[in-house]
Image (cartoon, rainbow, N blue to C red; front, side, top):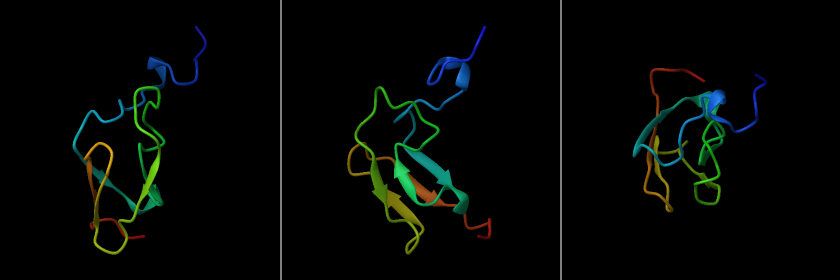
Length: 73
């Protein structure tokens, strides 16, 4: 069986399935939904400013993102 883009076989995260996400510096610039999430059932992509405070909340779905401080850039 060949893999299909955006299929279940890709092990993508369901968009808006959680309300809290830890992100790393390699995930910046941060957008919701993130690139490794399914897009078909989500809201429009929005970029979130997280660098200054270490936290950001999506205005569409309310997901809270926090920057993993243990990781160095």
